[in-house]
Length: 180
Image (tube, rainbow, N blue to C red; front, side, top):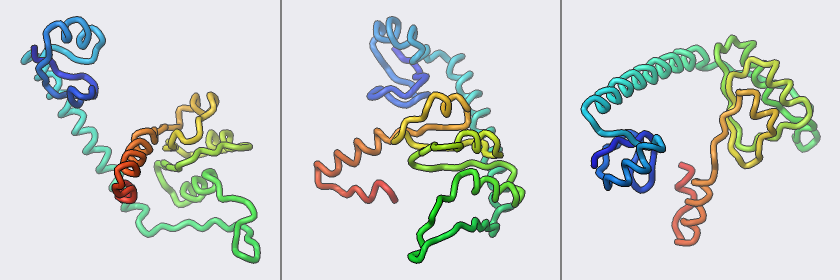
């Protein structure tokens, strides 16, 4: 039976793929669980229309981002902090400081990415009071419930990356090529 996947399913395929599976598997599991739908001409047409709308919205978002990039091209920010004799910071430069500096330069939308979301002290309050739209972080440090409920964080899992790195180490393959 031909079905269209509504999510990525290993090893069947990616979301939107039309695959041939056993009728019982489709009727008793994939379709009731919302993981697939009948690959009827009507469903295929609906998905194609949805895909076209999605691609159009992505193109519009990309265009808006390029306008923002052009606006910020060559814009620099300086954040002065005290340093010691060996030019090491006494304190730290926070996300809030960077966001404020970008907002002062008239950035319309501000997104930030960091690998380890160390949210100590007034970090959440500072983020909440800033013009930061979204903060992309990895799950190397779990977010607190309070942080997760702000709606400003997008957490990216490092599990696949770590798993691939471990596999490559065991096989004697290059790990550095993961980061290029």
